Amino acid sequence: MQTSALSAPVEVATGQLPQRVRVFEVGPRDGLQNEATALPVEVKAEFVERLVEAGVREIELTSLVRPDRVPQLADAEELLRRLRLPDEVRTVVLTPNEKAVHRAVDAGVREVAVFASCTETFSRRNLGRSIDDSLRMFEPVVEYARHNGLSVRGYFSMVCGDPWEGAVPVDQVVAVARRLDDLGCTELSLGDTIGVGTPGQTVALIDAVVASGIDIRRLAVHLHDTYGQALANASAAIGRGVTVVDASAGGLGGCPFAGSSTGNLATEDLLWHLHGLDIETGIDLRALARTSAWLAGHLGRPSPSRAAQAIMQTPP
Ligand code: MG
Image 1 (cartoon, rainbow, N blue to C red):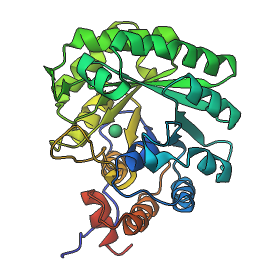
Image 2: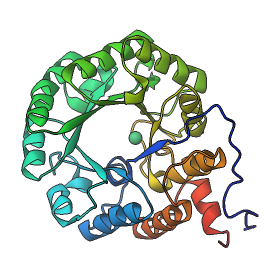
Image 3: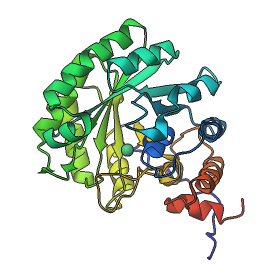
Image 4: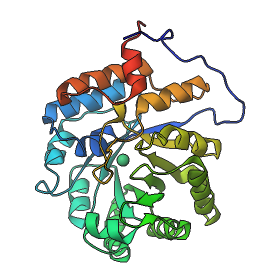
């Protein structure tokens, strides 16, 4: 294949965007949870360490789910025991219920996350209960976390569309965001779980959530690339003032609810875009692409990220 002519993007600032965007890396949890291949714990630990070496400073590490439900993450506590990360690295562990948050506190975790659905059907399929019941289930989770000095990240998912219910009304999304805010979540991540959103829709959602009283600095976007719109949606969100973007190295993680099953916004695609706009991330794009290529070897398939592939074919 022909190599790309540039080893890094040409940096041209537009003067209208933030100087810095925080990349919240979800590869080790959201990515690996949705991969068919379960990796050994030492490979996962090395993956996280390589991410940190590349400059990643915010990482979702794993989920304290029931091992029989998500065998890919059955080694969560073992992974947490193995990792020795610098203090400045923000690490988050998903805790779907009370038992999980107790395990998180016992494991010395400093920040946890809860995952709510904005649609009834996905809530019942994914969490086994209605939206209202799931939010009530999170009350003691958040309370226990905060009581123990932990921050809580709140995901609200299926914000743009749902495979069973179709388009999701904006008011429904805002209502869930408000509930997560009332519970005491510090950062709220707006999730287009099946990747059907468009830039206009993304901006309208952000505006509605902010109008409901949530500071935009507490808002993150979590986008999937099913229709090739993840980066366009991230760009629109950043243009609106969002400064935290979820992404996964190499675009890890399919979406089990979307037929075409592409993964999260790839961190490499996001970095090429941000660095090209002269927006700082603190992440070394080549080192990150090398990490994705290394992990792809363990997963037995190439990274779906086009930026990751192109970078690996270009001499430094
Ligand atoms: Mg995701």
